[in-house]
Image 1 (tube, one colour):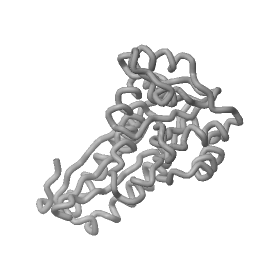
Image 2 (cartoon, helix red, strand yellow):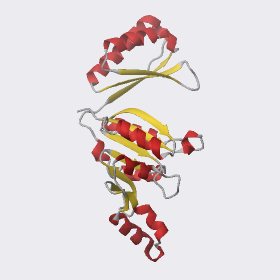
Image 3 (cartoon, one colour):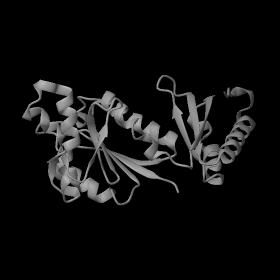
Image 4 (cartoon, rainbow, N blue to C red):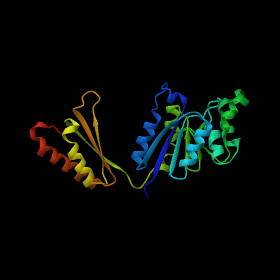
Length: 245
């Protein structure tokens, strides 16, 4: 079965442009390599009602919902509260996480630090790779990670096997020195013929005549056929005036 996912990137700092969202890009690449179709990436503010609305709208429609950000102890971090309200449960201190915090801080542990152990009572902690800390939570099919890229990547690796699909997605790239207007009709023909292949055209930011064509499909045979037919049609049209690699 093909698995599908969405990402909710949460944070006013993303919406204001103060912080660049590299987390969604990283997870998107991971999901692609696992054969999971990522259908949407939403960027939403640190508002509990908005986070809850998106969770309610999408959690039952997708295999995986990823939330990124809003997991800290400050008042603007409301993701855990939104998840608790979405799943009709209380926020409680998780005993397993409390022990980790006590082991980590030793004699310096305090009630303020134990705030980090608060999570929805229906959630399970996501641990760091060294098992010394818990930075994310799993609530049914909702996977919530912190916005700090280093912590996200580390903790994601501990549960990534949960996302791997038996049906992988293949990808093939083609570089050509040609303006898009010269091959748009050819591309349309190929897309219509091979409807199980997603074909995208991406000009270089430095030179719009340097274009990368990417073919994606769950069928390597369809990719190979579509790619070769695209090349043949392009050569027939432009002859020696085209460079292909």
